[in-house]
Structure formats: structure tokens, C-alpha cells
Amino acid sequence: MIALDVALLAGLAVVAALALLLEVPVPGGGEIPLGAALVLAVLCLARPPYGVVVAVGAAAMVLVRARPWRGLRFVPAVLAHPSADPPPPNVRLGVLAARTAASAVAAGALKFGLYTAVPRLFSGGRDLVVVGVLAVGVVYFGVDAAVVRRPAGSPRRRPVELLTVPVAMTCAAALLVVGYRVAGVEAALIAVIPLFLTRFSFARRAAARRTYEQTVQALGTLPEVAGFASLGHAERTAGYAALLCRSLGIDSATSARIATGCHLHHLGEVSLQAPEAGAEPVTAAQLGEVSEQILQDTGFLAGVAPLVAEVITAEPAHVGLHAAVIRVASTTDEAARRWPLPWGHAVPRGVIDEVLAAHPTGREAAVAAELVRLAEQSPEAVSRVAALRPPGSDLELHGPDAHSPTAV
Image (cartoon, rainbow, N blue to C red):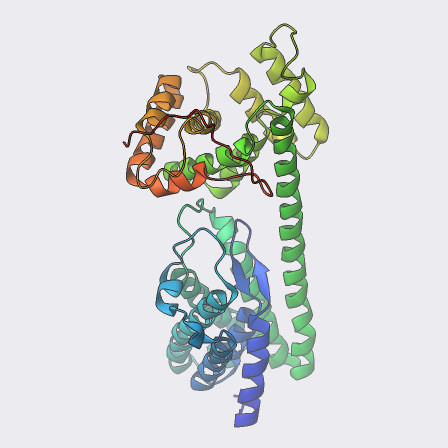
């Protein structure tokens, strides 16, 4: 087994602390620190107490970097950050330190038990070592996921989204451990390269996702600038849809597709006529066909084209759940604009009545009923969406002729 002195312990802790500050984006939202793989490898290579000392020392360095004396309340931040907004940097570092320490202690306890019962699991052949790393990794990332809960209103993520980065990190840690066991420090240093490539690939994927979202948002503003929808309508429709998707248990990948449909369901109107033109009204079938064709022609938005066409053309009795969510969300925003903000702790009764009246049958009625339930149980969340404005806009989005609201 490796003999570690104080200097080596301190050096490993410093390296682990620096690596913890590098975050790997997780598909569907969230981050896992790159240093988690290094901490996991140290836990599996060192004797049980030493590995935990290194991990906790790295967490302590991160905590000092967060400057806890600046009035942070770490316990609420660790258990659940209540806001959907990104937390401040020092809160993020506090959460990072807590999740690292908790995960390392739990994984170290398992390592101690396995090391005592089956010593060869961490010092035998490569197959046994990999099994040991996988077992410790399951506990480490399981505790990590349990310590930090996602913000309220976040869509549910599929198992593949939850496991992609932890599996990659565990494999990287196993490669580090096996490399060190087989050929020493030199092989372990070479094994670090795939770990950084993992971060690079996930970061590139996240950047591509952000570019896609920004493009969709920009296209969603075109009908608003042209006068076919109120400023911020696409953003607020997507906000109402996100609340409904979360409440209905729709996974994050489908929620993202619905959000894209919310931003683009008015796009086809721009190519048909100006809002003040005196031409004959465009039928829903024409508008749906044009909208679908535009999105198909872009290539990267072809997947959402049938959903947008369904939102525009489907009869209420035949509309699917996803299209119904977009329709109800869009109607909610149109109704909410007729009521002045802020609403306080209750959604205006007039908004609820308009939404229910506009969607009396089929899946639309079920989704509208779910929105009513949200308005009664979480009026603050609905109010926050109603107050959304387009980025960079200081325009008043609610008409001055709106009458006073009546609370639900």
C-alpha cells in the first residue's frame, strides 16, 4: 500500500482543491466538479484514513476560498437552494465544499469496510481494482446527488442524463488507479489526459446547447418585433410550460422540446403578412404548413416542426399532451397581460377563468386544470413567470387599461 507523508497529503489536497474548481456540465442541468474523479482515485489508492483526509482537506480549502465570514448561511444553501436563479459564486463554493466532504466521508467508510473484508479488492489484479473503484464511486456520486437538490421547478431528468458524467468520472478514476498500480506515477499522469478531455467534450456540448437556446430565443422574438405577439410572449409562454411540465412529470428532454415549441409557435406568421395588412385571414392549415416548412428548412429545428404544426392546426379533441401544454401556456400569457402586476400571493381569478374558458375539452382541459392547481398552490411561481420581460427591455408589458384583479 502507498506510504503517504504529510507533505504528500498536503500536495494531493491542494491538487484536488484546484481540480474541484473545474466544473463539468451535466446534460439537463447542473455541474459535477472535475476533481471528483481525482478524489475518488485517491480514496481508492490510499489507506482509508489518508484518502478521507485528502478529500476533506481539499473541501476545507474550497470553503476558505468561499470566504464564509461574508454572511453566508451554508446549511440552507447545501440542503436546497430555494431560487431558480443561479446562486452567488460564494454559495456555489460552499455547496461544493459540503458535497465533497460528505461524499468523501461516505465513500471512505465504504472503502474502509471493503478494505478490511477484501484487501485484494484494492491491491489485487486489474479486474478486482476496477470493481472496487466502481463500488466506491457509486457511493460517492450517490451521496453527491443526495446532498444538492435541484432548484424548485426544474424539469425531471432522465437516468441517462443523471448518469452520464458520474459514469465518465468513475471510469476516469478507475483508469488513474489501474495506471498507478501497473506502471506507477508516470502512467497515472498519462491517465489524467482522458479526464481533461472528458471535461472539454462536455463543455463543448454545453456551449453548443447554449448557442442553440440563444438562436431559438432570437427566432422567438421575431413575431414580437413584427407585432404578432406581445414583447416577451415567447419567454413567458416557455415559463408557464416549464411549470406545467414539472407538475405533469415530463422529463427534461421533452420539456426542452416543448420550450422550443413555445418560442417558435408564432414564427410562421412573420412570413405570411404584416399585422396591419388588409389581406384575407390566413387559415390555421396554411399557417401550420408554412410554420412546419420553415422549421424543416432550418435542419436543426426539424424535430420540433411537427409539434409546432400540431399546436396551430390540431382540433382540441385530437391535440396531444405536449401541444396542449403549449396552447394552455400561450393562452395563460395572453390572459395575464390584461391584469396589472404585481399580483402578490394570488393569481387573478380573471386569468383562471379565461384559461378554463379557452380550453374546455380534451387534453387542453386537463392541462388547464393543472394550471389552476398550480395557481392555487404555487401562486408565487406563476407570478414570477407573468413578470418576465424580454432581455434588455424596459417596456411596460401590461396594458394600462387592465382592471383590478380578483384573487383566486
